[in-house]
Amino acid sequence: MQHSVCLARHKSSSEYFCIMDMRIGGTFLPSESGTFFSVLNPAYNMVCDTAPVSSYADVHHAVEVADGAFSIWSEEEPISRAKVLFRAAQRVRDDSTSLSSLLTQEQGKPLRESINEIQGFARVLEYYASICSSIHGDYSYSKAYGHSFVVKQPIGVCAAIIPWNVPALIMGWKVGSALAAGCSVVLKPASTAPLTCLRLGEILDDSGLPPGALNIITGPGAVVGEALAAHPDIAAVSFTGEIETGKHLAQKISPSLKRLTLELGGSDPMIVCADASIQKAVAGAVAGRFFNCGQICVSTKRLLVDASIYDRFIDELMQAMKHIVPGDGMHPKTTMGPLNNHAQKEAVSKQVQDTIDAEQGTLSYQGTMSEHADPNGFFLPPMLLTDVSPDASIMQQEVFGPVLPICPFTSVDEAIDLANSTRYGLGASIWTNNMETVHNIAPAIRSGIVWVNQHLKIPPEVPFGGVKESGFGRENGYQALDHYLVEKSVLIKL
Ligand code: NDP
Image (tube, rainbow, N blue to C red; front, top):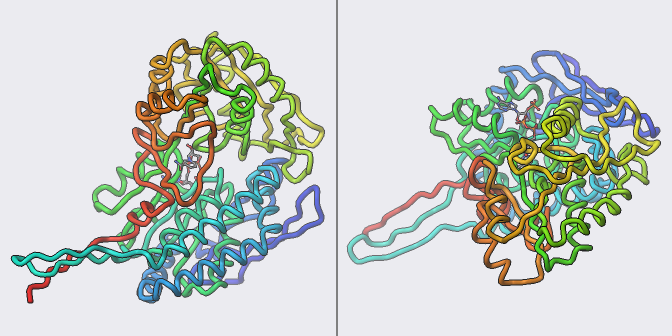
């Protein structure tokens, strides 16, 4: 079968890019199925490229190849693994202009956000490269039992399944930690944003990974993703995506008792106390909600503001929202891109309409589109919903789009209750100048992460993940390595 090469041209530029097939065994390989799906540029609803629909045979082949590479990669000296990751990070930085452009064209986000994300991918690799050699076990001695030591060994071939909202960064989290631990990986990117991941995979391979240590298969998650996760030779699965998909996947693979990490949705509250700097909190709310068009698991999804500053806060927020420029992410004036796909646009529009129809909130502000927002693109304007009932579904369900619902609170206890009133527990932020307030609220919030006077910051050194239905397990930090390592106790009686 011939390798397929797809050439596409971005509507507003003369740049061509060229993507070839899945990545298996360190090379681009066509799918055994011979079929492809279209990847759309969400700013125009136009095909920007295609990717193969992997078959069960492809899944099996990828796992088999990864299994072969595991015996090589897991035996590499940690310092050698580190060198590969450092080299890949540098190559990604060197190639960040074209990678960022590709990311914007398949995902929709403004180019400067794509540049941040690509740099973020490189930074994650550098972080894991820097701690590769520090992975170690434990030791103890007793007269009765002798010398006991605990070795940490890579678990085997791992599956990574990721969403479309920040595909490069999330790929970095999973692949960086798995490779540092000595595991081999089969990655399944989202079908609406697989292209940048394929290019990043190529760069990692070209940086010295043994062929097959990282493989990338594409195609519908319900078929390809599920087959991958359930494959008997997959030792651990790391999934990021929606709660319902995560629950379904957990059920599917539970009979095998394989290790599973679930990074799922969030509905992060932002609590603005009376003594907060309104100017900084407004800037934080705008960045927290409208970055990536509101499509981040830890976006500011519910704004809770002390009643004594509520009206002033709304006035200043509306002024700030006027500066948001929705449009094609490739245009330099754009500050907010389109939604990633049509279904997402429809879902968010419905959530807003349902709130208005049920009289559970008022649409107090709606931005205007720039001339760089093509009518065929999946654009929505930035929207502010005020006086939203805490029971409204827009407060209770995750809203993955540019909509900010806001409601007042009258006491710190009420703010905590509101913050904890959903099934989610990913992130939260507290905005105050009073450290006592921080110490009262932070421990009481049921979430995996709490920011103070900031939101959305995810450095690779700090463990990241949820509680409640936002999932379990951690990305980033030393803690993420635990998913990819097994501890073996060796007891020696001399
Ligand atoms: P989905 O759950 O729809 O998809 C995520 C990935 O799973 C995709 O690659 C998808 O493939 C695949 N998939 C779909 N169905 C199955 C299945 N039955 N078995 C195995 N894999 C499957 O999520 P979205 O892509 O829509 O992403 C948005 C969600 O991700 C939001 O809820 C967001 O909050 C969450 N998220 C969580 C983060 C965290 O760290 N907690 C970070 C970022 C996002 P395909 O695309 O082909 O359908």
